[in-house]
Image 1: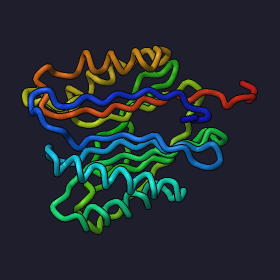
Image 2: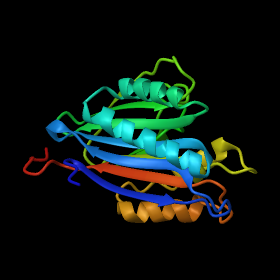
Image 3: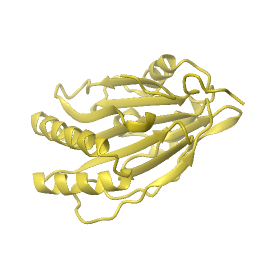
Length: 223
């Protein structure tokens, strides 16, 4: 799928230990005006019910994003959908990138923060309004605007990449950002590196990972 102004790589790994399908997903959605929506989500739980719920939320997220709604509005509608499914909780992050403006709008629903990398600057966990998980019902969501330069990266992921039973999540997030100090590394190598260094062999949760790097639009002149 063409993604003007973006280079993209992704991975999905099922849970090693659970032996069950999970509820993690990612999506890359082309939009009018050369925009692209990036979505990563995680339905809590595992097994066929989580997978079925994931399928419904993924389809709903794609449909809503294609209406060119603001990410916060997409999450509000998804929250309504999740509430209607009953006994469903999920986290989600949605980013919509406009390569003509070099701007990204991002909203999260209880999801771990994306990482931004920029040439010449240390990687940073984005400080975004966290929002409540989908399925809580009636909690407002807020989108943040982020200006991106050519060569900047966004790393979106589910908690299975970083959460463990024996280490604090802040320690694991620092380990994640420490692995992203080379923003020029090929994206496929970045995906492999993150999974190799952070993923535990006994991982009890599935992992979705989506990495996007901005690049010039075809025919655009670089200043």
